Length: 525
Image (cartoon, rainbow, N blue to C red; front, side):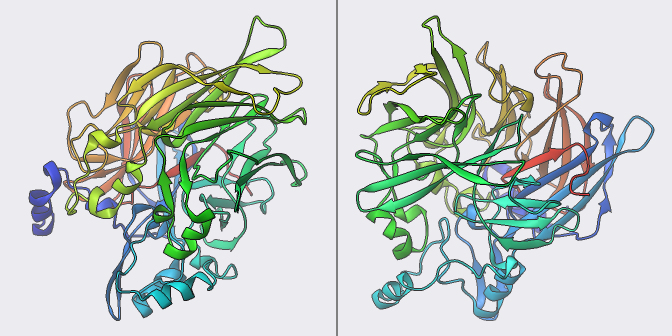
């Protein structure tokens, strides 16, 4: 082991080094073949795309510039091509590109990236009052004509409705996107948002948020996969509707459910311009109610009913489905979500906390996620519940210690599922330390990484084996950092028993990305 790696291991939190996965600047614009150990099943043939923060530091002419929050790391796009080799296994090829070369170059030349709104970049306390006032009236969005200035890397989707064919779309919570060439991964100009999809029609559903002195206004819209046209299907506004930070929402066969937890923007949204980041503009209200707005997505009724529950915070919804009731003309909607008692997780994701050699040590218990299933009972299939009537959302299941970045067999989207997979934090490292599979019938969690070792996984992507023998008949793909070697590998797990089937190794560290998608066939060709 090189001396630098040895020193890192000695000083790493609980001897679980992970720094290499948070400052991975290696890119490979041309495909390189990875060393395969084991057998990648032919059912995995296709392409895995990953997007998320890559490196976070830049050596500038004025010294080192560093991003503060993991979500603000410089975005990278990764592609793993899984190609059958004719012998019952597959070869794996890796390609990657930085998506923000122009942004990095600006930081290198100036030593700062002032004026750009970030998720959580800490401000210089020496910035004068006048400079802060001046920044409120300066443009905050990077030039849309320069693709490499847009730090957009939360989710990735090929051939999104309304976008040019043959492109990958990078999305974030802001009202902007970045699209990239599907083969070269080169970034293109900016456009729109963050979305859900109808698995039958391919239509895209989303919302945007408008700030106002009286509160917030949420506009739910649909973009047709056939025509690319967009229509607003509901606008949620009025007394009690507040502007909140919402990362994801629910979709069922007939409804959209917008869950507004009480992490509110302060100053009617103007605080974002003042502080130049999202986190400092938000305040969690533990005494407020979480609101559940149910919207008809097919029949043109708009918002049909509102529910409420005690306060919580969430990043990720998991799934939602509806069940017919004995009472004629109504359904119960079941919503699965990963929730937290408050918003401390957002602050725990500063680099000083997640790095194994970082100065901060977030208490794991304060940000422990719980898988929760809520029931929204008696939703009418016709008509609306009178305005002002608010029903109670009921918790019918809660599994503590659930994983984040939840995923499931995509064939069970909008259907009742038994299994959910995610990255888990059991307290062995400063970040995450394994993958977990929740059985919602037994409430038990099965882990990959039963015997803890410093291998840090990213989000798991479920790929069906095509047999439909059971809901968990398939495989999980996850990019893992071997903290002791400082290198990464693409891991394939059997989704039934969470055991390793194969891995494809690379001689460099690959960043821990946020989200990804697996595509079986070439797209855009």
